[in-house]
Image (cartoon, rainbow, N blue to C red; front, side, top):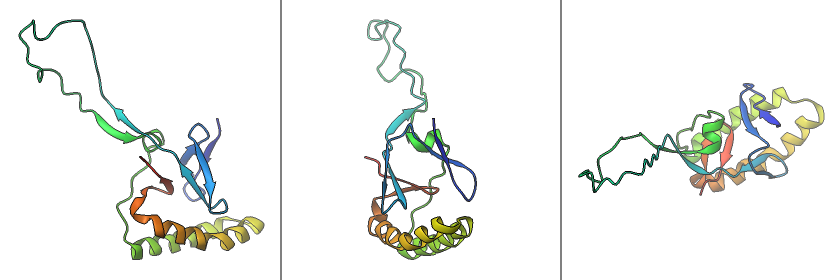
Length: 139
């Protein structure tokens, strides 16, 4: 299994076990996250609750939570919603930090394509769930 890491923090972001595709000249990955229920326990012991005199609501509250699979798997932290100004400020800082980590041809390719990728993200900002630097389109 191939695991991708954030160049700035070294944190694991994605593995090849999750479907994704490169978009915007390879500047972004579109990851297909899925909603999953975490912590749900459904135990069927074969008893008939109505025959036992139990109500349907009676039982154990198992604290089930709905999460996005990739966010849960890699323990990503969901970011609060950005307005356009906040997002541009965030991206400028991110671009500056990341550009310093790249060398030669990768740096030139990044500089050439990141502006269009940022504009693309701005146009989709209200439709995105941001978790660290992984962008997920969940449905």
